Length: 371
Length: 98
Image (tube, rainbow over the protein chains, first blue to last red):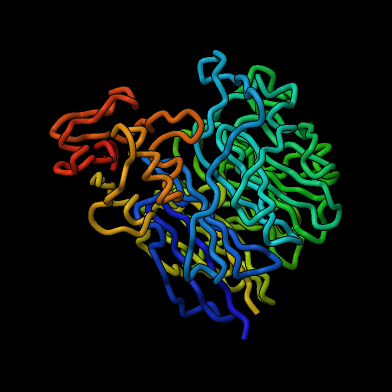
């Protein structure tokens, strides 16, 4: 019997939402780690019972929790994230040099092949890897020490490495994204990196077409077509057909091209989802209507998906890591809001229903398809 | 035995109820207590003080005998009442935020 397990990280704990393949009735467990910020929870693709969670607090710092039984029990593993060597400085908001300081783990990306290997994207922007199930963490310094690193500046949410994508077809190739530096690619398992931002234009920086400095909010890839990438930037929805070498805008008829998450249908590489948000100064949906937009043409042409979503008086946001898709035959789409709702669509976005309505603000949503 | 009171979140993390009692050899200082605490409960490493520098985390406070010891040197002897176990050493999450 197939089923799904939705992993929701919130401002005050983690929640695990499970259902069978119908995705109509849900069991809710949690809060796990009540009172702590859970930036991200993600499972290993090769061992679905192996979960990693980023647990943090302004008081007590960063912890990494690991479960080996699908989230029934957890135990803390390693939480020492030390930058390699003398980390030097990046730019602060006012343009002055600021020491690189670890703040928290934004994103955990388990290896596609080894449940004990997991990558962590952190603030201040850096990439770490553990090869022993999270007990010890080692920085992959080639990204942070890129020659452009001293010029990186934080976005409004901090200078975070929030996106890690592993290429399933080309071992050693991986993508990361940093707010507000941009997208980066490695072809050698994270040893060396280069910016892949050609074609991006950001009016909020002195040179709109600069090599780095772009506030990339999220990247997405379909595993069957890793050369095609989608990007939700601070403003603009973008697409690359050459693994990030160049980008073109595909915002098309979206009501606004500002937003945070972007994701791709599990079985249709040209079907893409975004959640348009009014603007960077109004972090809520246009007209108080919560609408997911779907493109079936890889961008440019978008349709609003509204059935089951609030179409008046809705002023929530959907954060960058808070959308996911399952891989059941009829692809399920999930997203969480800053208002504490987690919505699910069991039919590729045609209709939606809340799984839960009153969680703390949702920071991240992942889903595991269970057989 | 030294009595240590943890904030609620760290009690949950360390799976303890009530006070923690710790034997501390040598002079009873804040550093000696925290070293003993982290040795018994390694999951607390990094949650009270920075792992490398040993510096107190910004929103953690240390109290004892109605005094704020947060800004005292870590190797200063603690009050005799703490060393004798008649008063607890309090590790407190500072009042900040929600």
